Length: 358
Ligand SMILES: Cc1cc2nc3c(=O)[nH]c(=O)nc-3n(C[C@H](O)[C@H](O)[C@H](O)COP(=O)(O)OP(=O)(O)OC[C@H]3O[C@@H](n4cnc5c(N)ncnc54)[C@H](O)[C@@H]3O)c2cc1C
Image (spheres, helix red, strand yellow):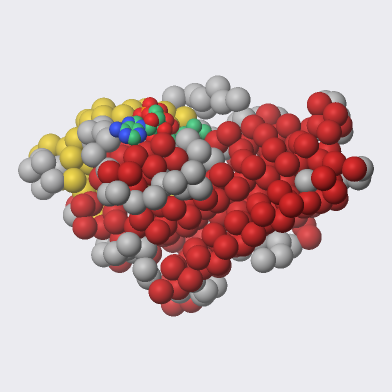
């Protein structure tokens, strides 16, 4: 997947600033939208560019090769778009998609809590009570990315009045939606990542993305996770390329490790493409979990190999700037939900192998 020269050039020039928070977060989404990237993988009948889930994965990888902050905002926005594409609520989809494709408003996913809930790790943190045919929401989402100050819609899993979970879309300008200042992150700072609090927020049935979260979340999980894996693929590709292009003896001594990491990356990417095309991961999520683990580990290994191949240069603020950023970016891959710890625990509980040490 080749990005347009304009977008590629802007990402290269802005990657350090997007990481450090020196580039205005408001700039990022319109830049990605101007290249029409959010339409990829959506049907033409809905204003999309066609293609499948793996095309989105490859696009997120291409962006993440240049800036994981940009790849991560892409993930949040495109995941929200995917929720609408897979929602039975056609009216909500038709109303919101044009602005989302054009980057005029941000889509954000607060579904980490739902994914942890599905895995039995956490209670739902937002609840609803019924009032006059509508719902009143209370609760919090402690981490959400792409909460663009200019406006956003966020998907949240909610414990319904009858105790059954559903997924709602909440607009930024609804009374009772309280956004914190951007969180003081150690990297990925221009990603509009903040906490949200809902205080008696009024939501109608027309804003429900999925009335039955228990049925719906496992169906969107392959895309949710597949898009995340795109970040690992992009970062791994970039660090391996940097390691191979490093001058000096180190590169030769590392040849075997570089080849082995590249092979793991390719094998995982191929397995992801195949599984998404066959729709295999809804019924067999363990396969997807193993790919997510393997490729996050491959990305972390690749950044380590970039360090070893490039040597002391990586420790110099100027020449090592790109490496230092990738090192910080790589630290994010194991912790985003579902975290590697969580996935390994889930696989172990099913008696499945958990990764390369197994
Ligand atoms: C920069 C950034 C941006 C984020 N953006 C978003 C976003 O846009 N949307 C969103 O929904 N979330 C987002 N998150 C939240 C993220 O995905 C995690 O949910 C969040 O980090 C909270 O989990 P924790 O790591 O504090 O986990 P904790 O619950 O404190 O757990 C610590 C570790 O143990 C694991 N763990 C916990 N309990 C168990 C268990 N019983 N068995 C096995 N493992 C367990 C966890 O997965 C984690 O690895 C973001 C996080 C970061 C850092």
